[in-house]
Length: 260
Image (cartoon, rainbow, N blue to C red):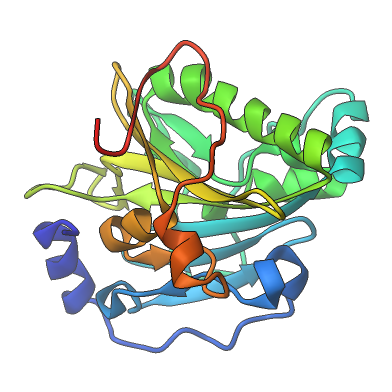
């Protein structure tokens, strides 16, 4: 169940429907954008379209509820060829100031600005600069962001290289009775997740606790949707969502498969 404290904040927010989705269909499996299956996540959400990924931003959490990408072998090779990365984090100017994160929110927080759609996936310098928008960022523990999460991102790129295409959706998870925040503004997820679909191989999701000692779960997409309130691949069949594909686990992690 999603955290009750987060729901209190969501219900207190000005209830406005999400703006119509911009033209981001190429980033989604079968052109179907990830679906909020828990309607209480919807207030003050805004879809944002970027060159290489799409985001659903929350004005309550002041971060991404999901970031979606379509990786191909050619896009990954283009990303590998880029020397140096932007590293220029910036507030998202398309968002109202009352809803967006600012650079000052992260100062002396002890947490990293963790990409949802990774910089390392970006196939051009312009796309890379866009990935540093705070709309694509959530607070992550350094041990997670710089360690096993980084390994997971590299592993997903390897999957795209090996199989030609991978659809990837990444987001935060808020569970428990209390939600930590940065300066009372940016909510800190208790876990972060990454869902992957590889044509011909199936789908699965990884969930990692956002802590100094990350613990991992490898779960079917259906379980992720129930816990996170987001269905990353609405066009997949019920059967495909119920079974976790036999994807590898990130190396050097405290990981366990669902049911273990």
